[in-house]
Amino acid sequence: MIGLGTLIDVTLILLGGFAGLAFGRFISERIQDTLLKATAVAIIFIGISGTMSGMLTVSGGEISAGGSALVVVSLALGSLIGEILDLERQIDRFGEWLKYATGSSGDSEFVDAFVTASLSVAIGAMSIVGAIQDGMTGDFSTLAVKGAIDALLVCTMTASMGKGCIFAAIPVLVFQGALTLLASFLQPLMTAAALANLSTVGSILIFCIGVNLIWPRTFRVANMLPAVVVAMAAAFVM
Image (tube, rainbow, N blue to C red; front, side, top):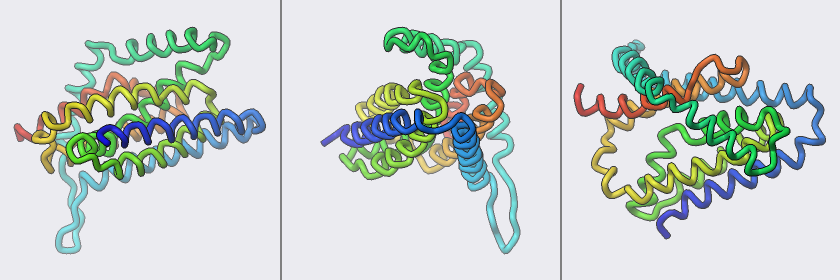
């Protein structure tokens, strides 16, 4: 069934979020803070690992670095585009609407929780590759694995940040669902070089998300999202 992968992913995110919400009320504020920072550290190192695997190569027993120009150009140009469009403001506005639509006006952390969780589970090669695999062949295995990871991440984040994290399922449904529907059109663009660039720059954004969990609002990650598109486009230019 085409689209089953996204449905599995979204379902697991919801299950993880509700589990975190159910158990979070029994966890002290001190433990919640520790869980949040532990999650942040995990996200930071996932980002570092993905970035290093894309920028470092081992040849003849020596380690060499590359891709610096790609990273600088993608992040600079992508962030410029994002700032002009002010994507973070648009996402924040949607988060504010959700906050009042769900009767959560008293939850001061709702919007930050929604935005942070959404960026955490929607960015990355697994989202794009998995959705295209699902749309082209009906293979939902990549998104099923991603769903298990997302469930654990959202569960931990919900326990410490609140129910806003649960609604990260919405952008995942929209983003991955759209990619699945457009898979036949996008598949030719998913070359090995484009996916490698996506993984490298996407991992840097994941690192930024982890930093924001410890030092809030350090990076406007939503405004940096176009960097991923610029990185993929660069594969056809460079």
